[in-house]
Length: 95
Image (tube, rainbow, N blue to C red; front, side, top):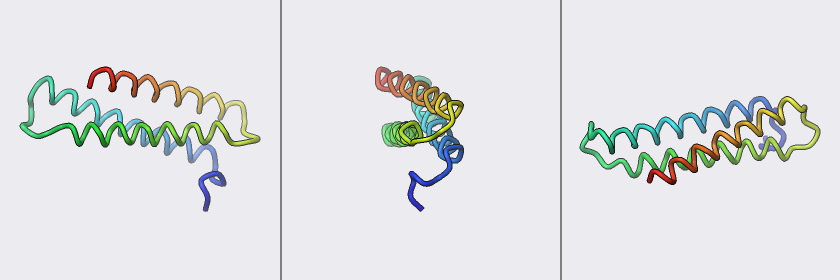
């Protein structure tokens, strides 16, 4: 099944899961770099977190570009795009 043919609610749930997981992974890497809890390299973890945030952002944009969607779904996609864009901006400025 093509991604454009899937239900908008399912796509927004996936966008939220990918985005939230990416934010949590980036926060773990950031906390470890400041507090030094583990003596392990955190750059790969940070990269995976940023990649997951980009993937969640792309799914939200995909939902927004679909035709004939409800206004409520369109608003949720806009909010998801805004949250993930701000989170990405924050993590790029912190890195």
